[in-house]
Amino acid sequence: MGKLQLKKEIQALPREQLELMILEAYESRKEIKQYFDYFINPDVNKLADKYQLEISKEFYRSKRGYTKARITNIRRIYKEFQGFHPGFDKELELLMHIIVVALKSERSFTFSDTLIRGIKSMMTLMVETADRNLVADRIISQLTTLLSDERYGTKYFRAYLLKSLQEIRPA
Image 1 (cartoon, rainbow, N blue to C red):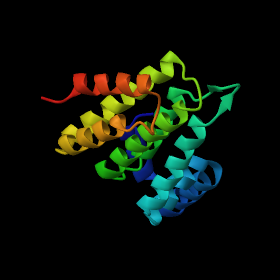
Image 2 (image 1 turned 180 degrees about the vertical axis):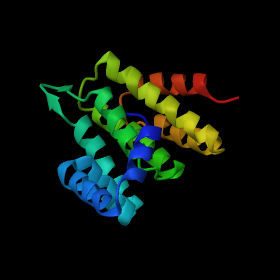
Image 3 (image 1 turned 30 degrees about the horizontal axis):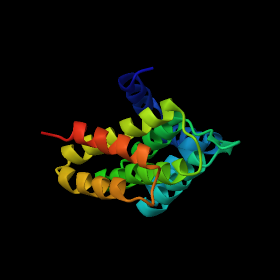
């Protein structure tokens, strides 16, 4: 069913039936409950904290020195957060959190090549989002400072991301 068809069906429903349908959806689906809770009481900071915690948990899943984090889960968490339309500043904050936690956990765990390339793609997404919102210089500066800090990640991982950052700089 498309959006247009759904809109037609909703308009044809009596108010009481529409209210009942919304309440049933609210009770039956965790995602819908979360959306309506945010819609009724939009606390962006609380929402951001929740998603940052999910990202952190994903990165610290491990077994025998190897991370079990999957870039698909990280992207899914980010997209889910983005679906609430929290504003580009909060999206950039979550993307920065992804990079910081990746760097921190990479010091303790071995990353797969797929995860490393995925982190690079998330950094690219971050720069593109910042560029669309006219704050690319600030974000690139923050990333450069972060990737130059020896406390985060191994020097090889930081060098890879720094080289990638230099390649994706917006015009």
